[in-house]
Image 1 (cartoon, rainbow, N blue to C red):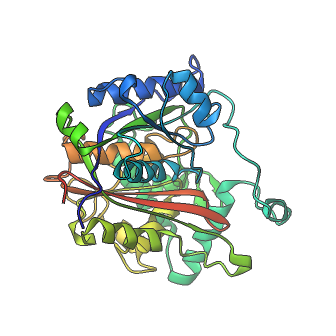
Image 2: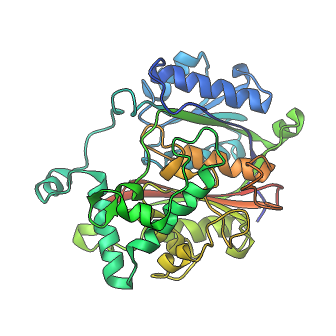
Length: 384
């Protein structure tokens, strides 16, 4: 199948991780300006705008703040996977002629400011809280415990995900945590919710990021080095009235669908950005996407496969959400941006994947064990 005709021509990640001197709206504006400068475009070129519910005033409020008059707006809200959905929706809108230059932004200040205000809780949330599910980490601890019981996954195998992230983050001058860690370090960190330790959990940072998705002819006219959107898919998983399989996510549907749409195979993927809110998130996502068999994600992570540049499947070469950046308590946008860097050959030389031509990005929003949104993108250095 041919590429969608959409190209990410601009990408920018805010360099700061603690930003007490900016409003969230200012951060959106700063990352928008950075992405547009990277693309060689101006705000006046933007005719599509996409953001999530944490943006002040939503898409309408931010369009006013930025001074743009887009003819296409999207404020899809699926938690941390929202930004991957936005890129996919922008690609579809461009293909349909509804816009030609789409700006996608995310920003937040959960580290130095108030946590972002989101929509009303799900109808079942009150009942879940009565059962003791009051914090996101508890959901993922439940999933991790079940995975251990079913497949023999160990805490050491989960810790290997963090070790890989830290090995990459030491080369990222903007990462919040740059110190390499060992398996023993992870296991010695305080237990947050059994079996997840502190170092099994993502960082909390201020910051943000933005990408510009443009029509192919716009990309050619600017001469910008881009990442072609080859395929995308999104899906949801939920408790299904109590019939939920805790060890399977909607990535089992979005991964194969995105790969089919892109006309590629998993063995052609050179690099993957995998949402890493917790170490267990990575292990299960790798299984569901098909990079390893169900139940073998732990041994796969422990094998060294995730390490750049020479592992079998290098992931999150910026340090990911576990070490680098999780602005707005969400990590989808930084995962997109690092995939663009890899395809452009702009990742740090110590972690740049040689000849990186095809990248997969996967986002997980909401909470596993209850309800979550998954989205998968396939990018190519060249159109197919």
